Picture 1 (cartoon, rainbow, N blue to C red):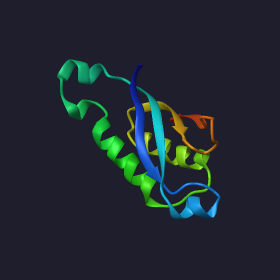
Picture 2 (cartoon, rainbow, N blue to C red):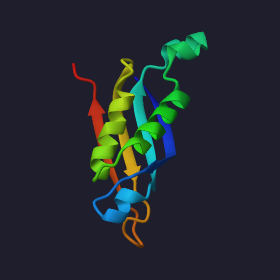
Picture 3 (cartoon, rainbow, N blue to C red):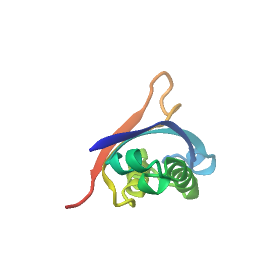
Picture 4 (tube, one colour):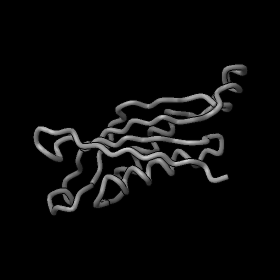
Length: 117
């Protein structure tokens, strides 16, 4: 299996438990490591044979902006499930950053979801 990477995808999201976090969208950043075979795409040079990362990134940005959630753990899990919609993806690891959550610190969470056998 091969890897596809997305680094520092900017998202705007209503996220957090405090009132101001429920009213004002906050910037988040997402890193992904997607385990997928790239053999067919490498041979064919055809977008149909790989994961369209442009469309995926737009879908993730739209999903993050759609509705409020309290925790970055929940937001990250929902975003990773979007990646797994493509049956060719075997596994996805994501790290979601919430800059400004704690002054002077960088807060992020990381999860891995695998396709069920």
